[in-house]
Length: 167
Image (cartoon, rainbow, N blue to C red; front, side, top):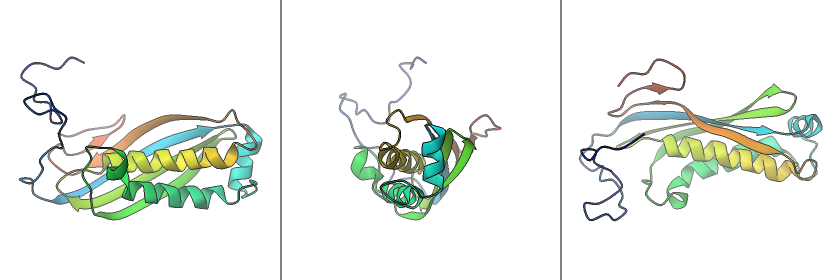
């Protein structure tokens, strides 16, 4: 994807310096984003995660808390993100196969900018937590893909991965 000269880069000032986007003129609106991440490992590590049988304890509960905490701290981790008042954050888990767990994070706010980064951060950190807790059984665990699944609200409207999008 090339960027035309007419395109205004929102995180670059006219003199070429990184900057936070000024959202002060935007009207606050309801915004929601959902992201997913996957962890892939040997069947015995995936089973141990689900059955709470890892040496470090209950991985799903720990990963859920880690993901929610990460959503709340996204602006501390991503330098140009706005610090948003989150109304809700949820992290859930689903086994897609004997070797895969899908982590899904949904975040909502009423704010001037969206919560895509918060949802992606929550899914990522929850998945990293599962890796950390499962590596004693399987150091070959892999993570990915990590992706935005859905977002709604704000000027750009609805986005659904592999779905109908409205602008």
